[in-house]
Length: 254
Image (cartoon, rainbow, N blue to C red; front, side, top):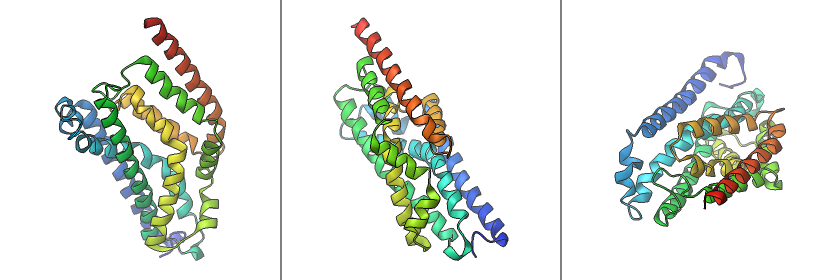
C-alpha cells in the first residue's frame, strides 16, 4: 500500500503511534534515570567501577538519553517521507528503515559520548553527575558550541536538515534497505548539526532533565523550515555570551 494514498491513513496513524510510543518510552526511562532509579546504570556505585566498568554503566544511559532527545528531531524528515508521491514507492518498511538507520547513527554517537565521559571522569574533568568539574571547562564547552553555530559545516548540515524533501529527491532508495541507508545519511548530517549542543550535557549534567528538555526543544526548532536558520546565529551569540560570563566568574573565583 502506498503511504501517500488516501486509503493508507490507518497505516500512517499506526506508524506515528509506534514512533511516539518509542519517544515516550525513552523519556519515561530518562525520567527514571534522572530520579536515581537508574543507579545501576549511572549512579555513584557505577561510577566507582571506572575505568573498567564505566563504559558498560554509562553507555545505556546515553542510549536512552539520545533516543529521548534526538528521535523528535527527525519528525520533519519522516513527514516528508510520508508526503512523497505514491509513484515513488514509499512504504511502511522504508519509513521504519529511516528511523532505524537514524537511530543507529546516534547509537554510535552514544558510544562516543559514553567513552568521552569515562575518560573525563577518570581524569577528574567531570564530577560524578557528569558536569564539568570547573567553571572554565564549562565555559570552554559553551564557547565551542557557540563557535560551531557559525561554521560552514554547521550551516550546510542544518540546511540539509531543513530540506528533507530535496534530500529524498536526490537520494531516493525504496524499500527497507533503502530506508536504512537514507536514515544513516540523515543521521550523519544530524550529528554534524547537533553534536556540539549534545556536548553541553557536560555543562548541565548528563542526567539534568532541565538541560535535556531545553536542548531537545532547541534542536527540534532548529530543524523547522522558516525558523531554524534564523535561530542559528542568535543562539551562537547567546552561547558565547554565556561562555564569557562563566569564564569571568571562574577567573574571579580562582
